Length: 416
Image (cartoon, rainbow, N blue to C red; front, side, top):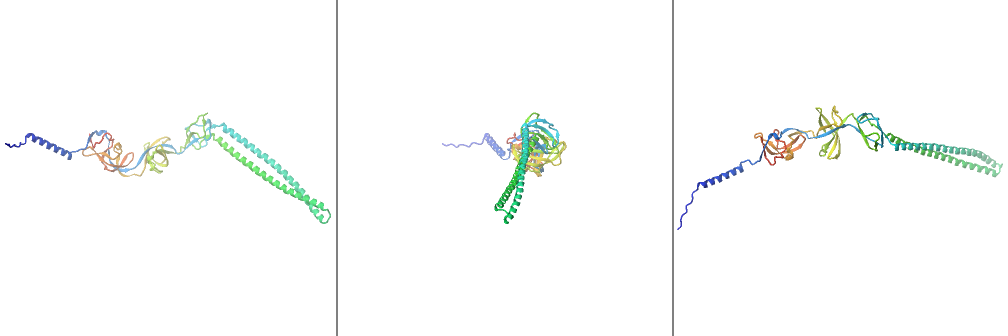
């Protein structure tokens, strides 16, 4: 027959298991809802750099190196080649305008000059001889013309007399005709002789003009040849310092070769290379400053060279308040070039954190706990000293500026 089975009552072991499970569930729910899940990293505060956010004038500027150069430089490029025969001065010395620096010798140019001179003398002699010969011929023809005119005058008188006599029938018709023919013949000879004299005079003038023009051209050629010989003497174009001289006695120099330069010591300028990234922001009139001998001086851009080489372009600057005392050619100046006039902004000092975060977030020090917590921010422009803060930070807050490379995905730094 069937038997009723009694229900077992809760045992102590079962109660303990249920209680432990409930407690574990409560702990899991609490951890999910209320516990802190951010990752932390202990950091020695002495090994990091902390900077304070501030409010001030943000001025976009770049730091560039400028080289001091003379205001004007003349490069000595020889016009004619030759052998260095004599050097009259040394590099580093002051020279005056017109001072001879060195002399070159060139046998080919000297022979060419002598040949041209000989040709000129020959041409001048030819002109003189031609003039004498043509004038003699002209005088002879003028004498012939004078003789013809004399004979014509006699024939004319005879002809006019016979003309009257023939009307009175004193002479024969043949005698009259003979006198008339002689008169007409001499009159024709006179016309031809006058034409010949006139043509010869014109030919003489034209020939002498041609010879004179040839002589003039030859003299111009000799003048050029003489200037070429003068170019063998290298002289100073203006007063200044002969900063370099690359020549030795006996050395051969080719035409157009540079042998040195002369610097005008009356003033200096600054030449600088700037990254091509800023070419659209740099223009004449931009100002900058630099420190020298404990003082701050101003410079201004006077000329921008648009050609880009090796990812940089060049500018010339002048000293806005006169050349500082003690400045020398070749010195390098660290210049702060201002790209704008500046405006009020929240400023964050530059630091190594930017390489890791790109300026999207930083660790901000919590004044209460002393720890640094990750916070998203937004940065704008930058200069060598500061970033412009657009969002996420307030003046007075402190930020960890040093590199974040070793922090990985850490959300909070516990500063010790």
